[in-house]
Every structure is written in structure tokens, then in C-alpha cells.
Amino acid sequence: MSKTLPRPVTAETTMFEIAQLAGVSESTVSRALSGSPLVNENTRNRILKIARSANYTVNINARNLRQKRTRTIEVLIPLAEYGRQHMSDPFYLDMLGVLADALSERHYDMLLTKRAPWAKGVETNSIQCGRADGIIIMGQGQDLEALRNFTDLYPQVVVWGGHLREDDYIVVGTDNVAGGKLATEHLMKLGRKRIAFLGDPAEPEIALRQQGYRKAFLDNGIAVDESLIFSAPFDAREARASAEKMLQSGVSFDAIFCASDVIAMSAITTLRNAGLDVPRDVAIVGYDDILIANSFGPSLTTVSQRIQEGGKTMVELLLQRIEGKSVDTTLLPVELVVRESCGAP
Image (cartoon, rainbow, N blue to C red; front, side, top):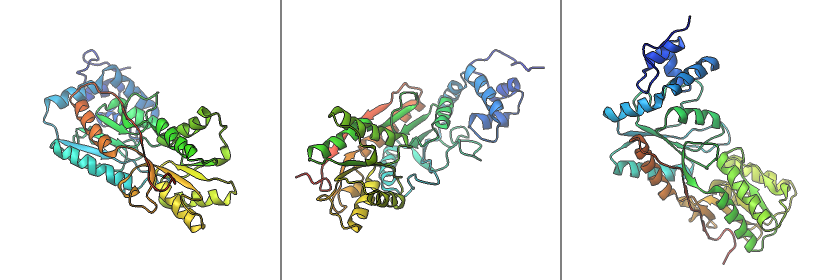
């Protein structure tokens, strides 16, 4: 016999009442709402349907407005076991510095974590258990469905990444397609004819940058040579291995658009070890404009991610989101920072 709520499903519905209707315990509801894998799919979907019909996330926002906040923001760097950036990645270090300063100016503390709330074995999240008022997620990762499900339930989230039309969570980042096109066309204007792409399109942002790379060729009436496209992860060591495979392939190239600065610096090291000169033999353009890009030898031409502006924007939008205000995805304009590695005067 099915259970019924003691009163109609409304924005004031409690977790206890959702548990009653679903025929489960409150702890099971809690796990389901946090995306825990400990709850089977059918039960989780039933609970999520009830919660959505009750507009349960609005209830969470209202409760947070009434109660004293933690004045803590979680910064989540969801690291994968292979191919993704490490906590020590220069991009993350640069961005974390900006976020820490921006949060401190607003009298907030920063909680740094690397396990996604939807990961196996994670039963709760910092918003749900009251450890943080909101979450900044650094990168979309490859499990987009889990990210979408989480942000559906917890709107107090801002994500650094690329704008995907099918997503409705709040994103801050650069226009990756425009950035990829800008980098590639710069190399074309320098007279480079065989421009390779090095990056992992399994990552949403990198896929968009590769889209911009392809668009540069198509808009200039040039067919894309698929043999010039090589996969390379963010990890510096693995990126060097990918650059070595690129050299061993026998494919000729005189320029590379690298999907990140770490990949670009790894490629330069590999090319030098093979006796090639950068930029005389191969011109290089990266993406990010991390702090060490200017001091690398040769200094790195790169597409700026506007890290300072991006970090401050994420903090501002998230705090507005926590207050229940409506905010929109923000794409920052791209800028090419020309230095030595591309061979431009």
C-alpha cells in the first residue's frame, strides 16, 4: 500500500515527508539527494522525482536565508585517476590564489576538496551537511550527467569550464571555441602550413578548443587534416609521451596549437630533446596564460583564460546565487598573448 504525504507536496516539504512518500528512511533520501552510489538507481530516481515535484531545492535556499551561514565556500577540484590535472597543476595554483583572495575580501573561508559529491563512496556533500554555503567546481570533467544531476538539486554551485548548450548550471570561463580559432589563425598568419592540435577532446573545454581549431581551417577554405590531430592529457608526463608519439608518427608539422600551457611546455621540451628548435622549426601556442608562461624558455604565446577576472567572477556569481538572486553563465572574451614560442616579431 502506497504512503501519502500528511499534506500536499509544496516548497515547504521536509526530508522526512519525502521519505514517507518514497517508502524509505531519511538517511536514504539524504544519500539519494547527494548522488550517493549506495542508493540503487530506481530508488534514487523515485526520490529525485518527489523532491523536484516539491521544489525541494527552493526549500534549501529559503532555509539558508533564514539560518546563520557558514561563510565558507568549498572549492572542488574533481580529479580523475588518469589524464586530468593534478592539485599541483600551475593553472589550479594560480586560480586558487585568486579565489582565496576574492573570498577573503568578502569575509569567507575556503574549503578545498578533490572528491566529487557524486563519486563512489561519498554519502553527503558540503552544502547538505552545512559545511559550506556553496561550491565552486573547477572543471566539468567527463561525467557530465552526474554534474548535471547534482546542480539540478543544489543550485548554490558555479562551475569553471566551457559553455555547453544543453547545460543549465552556471558556468564561468572563456569562449573556448573563439580561443581555439584565434590561436590557429594566428599561426596561419605567421605562414605556418602544417598546424597540429594537441589535447584531449574527451574533456569538454578541450573539445570546444578543438572545435575552434577546426573552424579556423574551414573558415579559411582549408580542409582539416585529421592526421594532424593528436590526443594529449593535461598531465605533463603523459603530455610529453603524447608529443613523442606525435614525432614518431612521421607526420610533418611546423606548428602546434596545444590545448593548455602545460601541454605546450611539455611539447616544447620533447621537441628540444629531439633536436628541433622552437619557434624556428615548430611554432607553439598554448592556452591558459598561467604565471610561469612568461618566464618559460622560450616564453609562451598563449590564449589568456583571464584567471584573475575569472576567479573574481566565480566568487561574485556564487555569492549572488546563495542569496537567491538570478545569475547567468558568463563567458569572458579571449585574448592572444604573443610571446616568443610562436616566432612572431
